[in-house]
Length: 259
Image 1 (cartoon, rainbow, N blue to C red):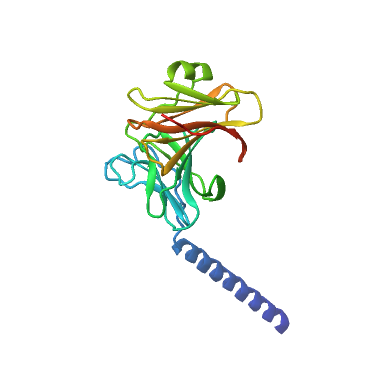
Image 2 (image 1 turned 135 degrees about the vertical axis):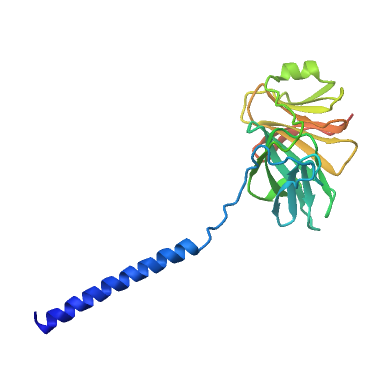
């Protein structure tokens, strides 16, 4: 073998050994490096076994929304205004995984104040938002939690405008397209019904317990002859109205009425 061929063979062997060492070092380093945690967005059944467990929260700059068990510092679903500005905080949510009815709680009380509703379902999908008047300015990501409430409200799938009128204490309508009904026998509830076949959505807008700093909305998105229902425990309905929207644009409403 010539000197040149000997040199080439030695160089090839050295390169092979070096490559093996580098690969082994990289594999060892990868095995030693800890894996990044994956964000958990769903609370599994049985996660809240004690009354002192913490609520599940989402935040954006200026607002914070939480869903918590009965024994926590924020039971039910709540929204806090965390900034002193011209915007107000709100929480938007769905119950039981059903996207045909959206609920909104507008916190009008100002910085540092918390508003909400104790009555939630077994599954709640929610996000925090900031509004200027009726206009959505900013919102966070959706988050889903389940099995937080000890006694979750049930979803009533059989409500139509006709059954709503028959059950409720009082109903009001706007141009025949939206209907708001409520009753206060034992446990107060509000219904928002869509009673016209068109592209518009029905809404119920109301206040409870005589508190003017928290405005509630039920946005019925499922279409004609469907109703959405919200429960409010022992709180009475104080002001209410029916409204019609085309997406975010208000088409028709009425003056608030007092209960």
